[in-house]
Image 1: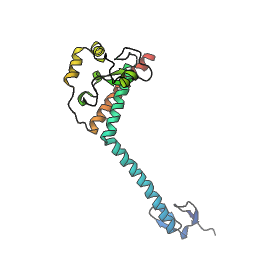
Image 2: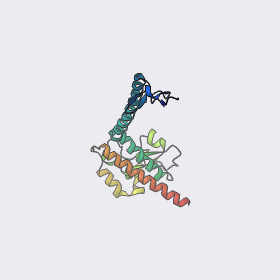
Image 3: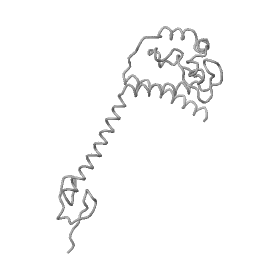
Image 4: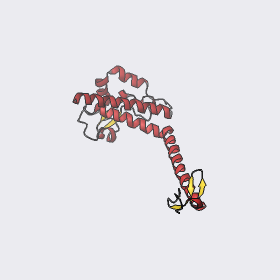
Length: 190
């Protein structure tokens, strides 16, 4: 007569079924094996909980969301202006061009993400010449008109405190605008 065997949930080896310990989570050949199994499962569950907590944290962390909003906005501006020349000097942008603010973003939080305040700039103009090689304002007026430049000047300065939710909304807005441009390009190629 053959004795029935079962696979231990812990070590995965087979043992006589009548000698195993039955627990709600399965069968084990020893108490030690069931404890090791429980410890492994707890560690895995703890890692999943920690990963979710970390994910939730970053989803609602103002600093993380602010960076994501900036990245999305600047990606859109670079895509929008990629065929234009530098707003400051009028030269070809080159491969390393940036999305540069006319009125500095740090001290102008109300218009930090305003599209009229951000345009493609050569790295040299934006980084090495402090964001303006001297012609940004004149070229900006030519590009968007004096009324829109006036609006930017009227909204200059001041502070605007944004929440993680605000930054998520800005990020989503610019990601959608970027998709629209990419979609339009696909339609042109088709």
